Image (cartoon, rainbow, N blue to C red; front, top):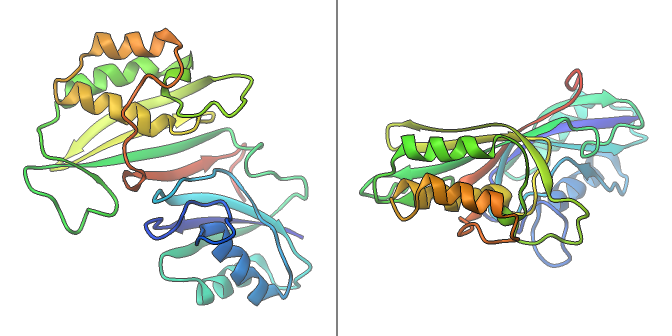
Length: 248
């Protein structure tokens, strides 16, 4: 059968999701523990390749197995052996042709900023520290410019031979709750470092180093990799991956 998992992780000590030969990764840990639980060498597929230090609440992975164990039982067994910074939140039996990347309708990310005159030891692994006060209204105004279908080449670090840099952003919003500023972005898919470069440009608007007009000019320029800077990965979290009808 084919099983899909919803996986949560803190990416601090991992060199991204995708497996590497000599560095710890989320995929490497999941496949190591799948071998323990099923006795099979399993190669998983996944919805998004998060970078070093990036976190997730709703990463989706899928794999085939000959194990007779039900999906929920496999999930409990995986959680028994997984390290404390990775957890399987749920498990489902899915159609054999299910592909967590190609079948996704959209992905939702959030970038978190700790905006205070003093840093927070408790937030340092999951948010980016900005001591200067951010103007949220200006950031939100700039943020609305990316909603819709655009050529996002200015916000991509590496085009990687992609035929198209056009993406559709369904929602983008900056919010503040106390000292925590969050930027929620939902799109059909994302280019490499698109959210982190977008956030770098938005922070420049927020601290007055740039303005909304200049942000829009960058977006409309279509010139590769001129936005930014690219903010660190530890402030970014993959919240959710959406599918037709959901995962059931």
